[in-house]
Image (cartoon, rainbow, N blue to C red; front, top):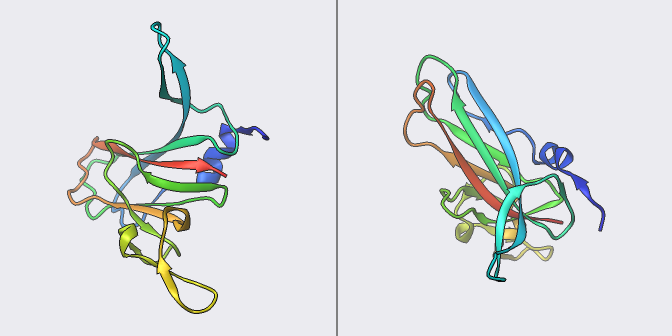
Length: 157
Protein backbone atom coordinates (compact mmCIF):
# COMPACT_ATOMS: atom_id res chain seq x y z
CA UNK A 1 0.00 0.00 0.00
CA UNK A 2 1.51 3.34 -0.96
CA UNK A 3 2.28 5.77 1.84
CA UNK A 4 0.72 9.20 1.56
CA UNK A 5 2.62 11.98 3.36
CA UNK A 6 0.35 13.78 5.80
CA UNK A 7 1.07 17.16 4.15
CA UNK A 8 -0.47 15.79 0.96
CA UNK A 9 -3.44 14.43 2.89
CA UNK A 10 -4.08 17.77 4.61
CA UNK A 11 -3.88 19.55 1.26
CA UNK A 12 -6.38 17.07 -0.19
CA UNK A 13 -8.87 17.74 2.59
CA UNK A 14 -8.97 21.33 1.42
CA UNK A 15 -9.38 24.60 3.18
CA UNK A 16 -12.42 25.02 5.34
CA UNK A 17 -14.37 28.04 4.18
CA UNK A 18 -16.36 30.29 6.50
CA UNK A 19 -19.25 30.89 4.12
CA UNK A 20 -20.95 33.53 6.23
CA UNK A 21 -18.02 34.96 8.16
CA UNK A 22 -18.30 38.65 8.92
CA UNK A 23 -14.76 39.15 10.20
CA UNK A 24 -11.29 37.66 10.52
CA UNK A 25 -11.29 33.94 11.06
CA UNK A 26 -8.31 31.65 11.54
CA UNK A 27 -8.80 28.05 10.38
CA UNK A 28 -6.70 24.94 10.94
CA UNK A 29 -7.00 21.33 9.82
CA UNK A 30 -5.26 18.52 11.69
CA UNK A 31 -5.12 14.91 10.60
CA UNK A 32 -5.06 12.17 13.21
CA UNK A 33 -4.67 8.48 12.49
CA UNK A 34 -5.74 5.49 14.58
CA UNK A 35 -2.84 3.41 15.86
CA UNK A 36 -2.89 0.28 17.97
CA UNK A 37 -1.13 0.75 21.33
CA UNK A 38 -0.15 -2.03 23.71
CA UNK A 39 -0.57 -1.36 27.42
CA UNK A 40 1.79 -2.69 30.09
CA UNK A 41 -0.77 -5.40 30.94
CA UNK A 42 -0.60 -6.68 27.36
CA UNK A 43 -4.00 -5.38 26.30
CA UNK A 44 -4.30 -3.32 23.16
CA UNK A 45 -6.35 -0.25 22.42
CA UNK A 46 -6.71 2.20 19.58
CA UNK A 47 -5.36 5.73 20.07
CA UNK A 48 -5.33 8.81 17.89
CA UNK A 49 -1.91 10.17 17.00
CA UNK A 50 -0.88 12.98 14.65
CA UNK A 51 -0.59 11.55 11.17
CA UNK A 52 2.84 11.64 9.59
CA UNK A 53 2.01 9.11 6.87
CA UNK A 54 -1.17 7.32 5.93
CA UNK A 55 -1.98 4.36 3.71
CA UNK A 56 -5.25 3.33 2.07
CA UNK A 57 -7.49 1.72 4.66
CA UNK A 58 -6.19 3.83 7.55
CA UNK A 59 -8.89 5.29 9.77
CA UNK A 60 -8.35 9.00 10.14
CA UNK A 61 -9.96 11.78 12.12
CA UNK A 62 -10.04 15.21 10.51
CA UNK A 63 -10.06 17.99 13.13
CA UNK A 64 -11.23 21.39 11.92
CA UNK A 65 -10.29 24.25 14.23
CA UNK A 66 -11.52 27.83 14.08
CA UNK A 67 -10.73 31.03 16.00
CA UNK A 68 -12.04 34.57 15.74
CA UNK A 69 -8.86 36.67 15.47
CA UNK A 70 -10.79 39.91 15.09
CA UNK A 71 -12.07 42.43 17.60
CA UNK A 72 -15.81 41.90 17.02
CA UNK A 73 -18.05 38.81 17.18
CA UNK A 74 -18.66 36.76 14.04
CA UNK A 75 -22.29 35.72 13.68
CA UNK A 76 -24.05 33.23 11.42
CA UNK A 77 -20.82 31.31 10.90
CA UNK A 78 -20.90 28.30 8.60
CA UNK A 79 -17.87 25.99 8.32
CA UNK A 80 -17.98 23.87 5.17
CA UNK A 81 -15.42 21.24 4.25
CA UNK A 82 -15.25 19.20 1.03
CA UNK A 83 -14.34 15.53 1.38
CA UNK A 84 -11.62 14.67 -1.15
CA UNK A 85 -12.20 11.76 -3.50
CA UNK A 86 -9.53 9.64 -1.79
CA UNK A 87 -11.23 9.94 1.64
CA UNK A 88 -14.47 8.18 2.61
CA UNK A 89 -16.54 9.97 5.27
CA UNK A 90 -17.74 7.73 8.09
CA UNK A 91 -19.31 9.81 10.90
CA UNK A 92 -18.84 12.68 13.32
CA UNK A 93 -15.93 12.00 15.65
CA UNK A 94 -16.71 11.06 19.24
CA UNK A 95 -17.41 14.18 21.26
CA UNK A 96 -17.93 16.37 18.20
CA UNK A 97 -21.19 17.87 17.00
CA UNK A 98 -22.52 15.92 14.01
CA UNK A 99 -22.21 17.93 10.82
CA UNK A 100 -24.83 18.40 8.17
CA UNK A 101 -23.66 16.36 5.19
CA UNK A 102 -24.08 16.64 1.45
CA UNK A 103 -23.84 14.22 -1.44
CA UNK A 104 -23.54 17.00 -4.05
CA UNK A 105 -22.06 20.03 -2.25
CA UNK A 106 -25.33 21.95 -2.62
CA UNK A 107 -28.01 20.28 -0.49
CA UNK A 108 -27.12 19.62 3.17
CA UNK A 109 -28.95 17.74 5.88
CA UNK A 110 -28.84 14.69 8.12
CA UNK A 111 -27.54 11.62 6.30
CA UNK A 112 -30.82 9.79 6.84
CA UNK A 113 -32.71 12.54 5.00
CA UNK A 114 -30.61 12.46 1.81
CA UNK A 115 -31.28 10.34 -1.26
CA UNK A 116 -29.03 9.37 -4.17
CA UNK A 117 -30.35 9.08 -7.72
CA UNK A 118 -29.37 5.76 -9.30
CA UNK A 119 -28.50 5.29 -13.00
CA UNK A 120 -32.01 3.97 -13.72
CA UNK A 121 -33.60 7.17 -12.32
CA UNK A 122 -34.76 5.66 -9.03
CA UNK A 123 -33.46 6.86 -5.68
CA UNK A 124 -31.94 5.12 -2.70
CA UNK A 125 -31.03 6.29 0.80
CA UNK A 126 -27.63 7.99 0.93
CA UNK A 127 -24.86 6.21 2.82
CA UNK A 128 -21.76 7.59 4.53
CA UNK A 129 -19.76 6.61 1.42
CA UNK A 130 -21.85 9.02 -0.68
CA UNK A 131 -20.92 12.08 1.40
CA UNK A 132 -18.92 14.71 -0.50
CA UNK A 133 -19.08 17.64 1.98
CA UNK A 134 -19.57 18.31 5.68
CA UNK A 135 -20.87 21.54 7.19
CA UNK A 136 -21.30 22.93 10.68
CA UNK A 137 -23.48 25.97 11.48
CA UNK A 138 -22.65 27.80 14.68
CA UNK A 139 -25.82 28.96 16.40
CA UNK A 140 -24.09 31.53 18.60
CA UNK A 141 -21.69 34.29 17.56
CA UNK A 142 -17.99 33.54 17.95
CA UNK A 143 -16.66 36.32 20.18
CA UNK A 144 -13.25 37.93 19.70
CA UNK A 145 -10.52 35.46 20.69
CA UNK A 146 -12.97 32.54 20.94
CA UNK A 147 -12.65 29.37 18.91
CA UNK A 148 -13.35 25.69 18.89
CA UNK A 149 -13.04 22.44 16.98
CA UNK A 150 -15.21 19.99 15.10
CA UNK A 151 -14.08 16.60 13.87
CA UNK A 152 -15.18 13.78 11.64
CA UNK A 153 -14.02 10.22 11.08
CA UNK A 154 -13.03 8.93 7.68
CA UNK A 155 -11.11 6.17 5.94
CA UNK A 156 -8.36 6.76 3.41
CA UNK A 157 -9.30 5.08 0.12
